Image (cartoon, rainbow, N blue to C red):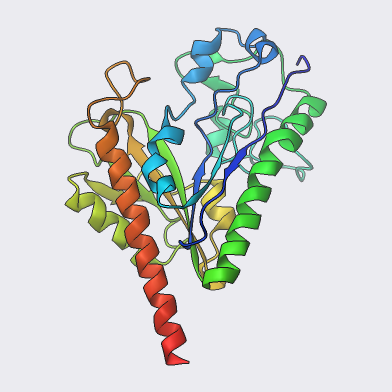
Amino acid sequence: MTNFEIAPPLLRPGSDRWPLLLSVPHAGTAYSPSLLREARRGRASLELLEDPLVDRLIWRAAALGIGAVVARAPRALIDPNRGPLEMEGRSIAAPPGHDPGPRARGGLGLVPTRTPRDGELWRRPVTSADLDRRVAGAWQPYHALLSAELERLRRRHGEVLLLDVHSMPARAAHLPRLVIGDRHGRSAARWLGDVVRRVGNESGLSTVFNDPYAGGYITEHHGRPGDGIHALQLEFDRASYLGPDGRTPGPAFDAVARLIERIARECGEALLGRQQGLEAAE
């Protein structure tokens, strides 16, 4: 592909009061002109991969003083929620016979290659040099920021929670509106997910664990409950916060922003309470 500009992720610093960190990997919109020229069907085909406005949806939680790592590069360029070997037909130092996994085989790997609506996304295959630039420019910095901030907060508070915030396509009316992913219990203590479920249900947003989204590379890689680092993926139905066009805020946008704020606050208070209890017992 053509040489193109890559926007690095942003760290929005917090106050360190809370043992929490927010992650928004799929709301980036920094499409360079050269990247758009490579798209077979233009920008609209790439925007379908976004989690629209999630970087704005977290504003109330961030206003509590919770830090956030936010991707600026679009998911179409590189997906921080995929592992370095989740690449269809090619990968980084993949062993012989490596299977990139069902998501990559379906076109939604480290670099998305096709979607059901638009088919093949790019005019030319992604080259090795191109992939290396994307990883170095956006993917590695994203995970480096997450790792550094989580470890810093863990040292300060003893335990920390990463809330990885996403959105999913509008679902049928009878299906839950919030999917909590904990990698089937591997990325976070279940009691933390239960706090999220309770808050969601009390706010009128039906919830479910791990179906159909159990979390991706971010929760799998960074969630280490045994080491005091928990990670939950939150998938909000886009119809719950966007308007009919699927791109602009809907009537309930601020209600969902308040819900994320409440989730963060109650999880944070619970973690702080646990730490105070441990210190009192010593």
